[in-house]
Image (cartoon, rainbow, N blue to C red; front, side):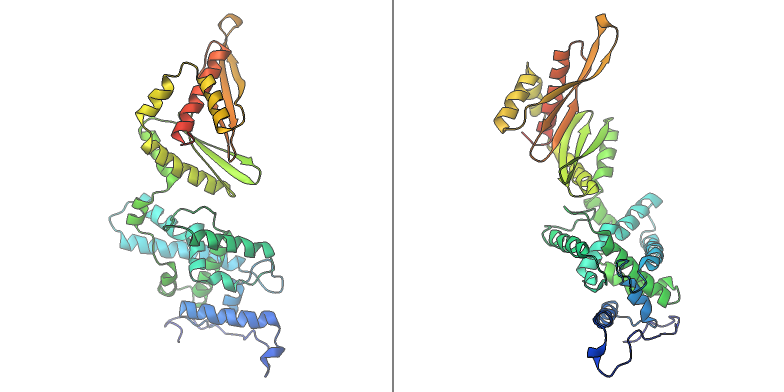
Length: 360
């Protein structure tokens, strides 16, 4: 296997101590020799300066050697430009905004982390952080359990270390080839397959972006609220003040992502009959209380959020909060002249939200 043509020759200083007996070499040296050899096979490319690849595979937690951080800095920019060149040439009819979406999808942390897992690059990371192994292992299991390719993120957020290592390996190739961007793309492209295309993005649009776009077209206000519940991050989507969907995850961004996905699904399947059934309720507060008892949820907690106007024309805005096993739901009602009516308004909004988010 030969290095691609036109790659700059860099003086290579062998990092393996000379010895007639491999067993005399330190274990970490033997591990790195094996790692370099395996990654070269994966890339179908032999490095002129193997120290670049050693550096690319070394986590900052490993003090005996230079880490990948400088190379990652270069790799982030190099891959971004390589993908930019590719989409610019491949899709001459697309506007800059669409090109940006395709580029982002192909070099996102999520995408590159999956590249690392798919090709087993994570096995060659030299580090001294036990928690890193668990994060990577949990992510691999989550990816294996997915029913279809997730472009924007699955149930677990991708560990950044996985994307970092792909960028640093790309940078090692880029530097070793004398900063030849075309050669980098030729060598590295097969690792990035399948490339995310406009068709894929059309089938799987970014949920949060799509949610805001669709609601704005209908003149509706979207609000995504976050809070912590134990070890979980919870995100709830409200449209015009009504709860539409809630999701939880270890990571805040994933909770937001999946809440948006659920909201899009719920908004699409929401029926008029559900709303009419709730609107006909004469006492939403009582109905909500009965529902919580039936579901064995905690009792609704009401609170006056705002008071306006002089004493003889006082107006009230009330909120209601319900604690569920997997989330805490909070909504506010519309302004009313009596606290009781303001509480009923909040209860009505909560009931609508519970229907829309499929809790009932």
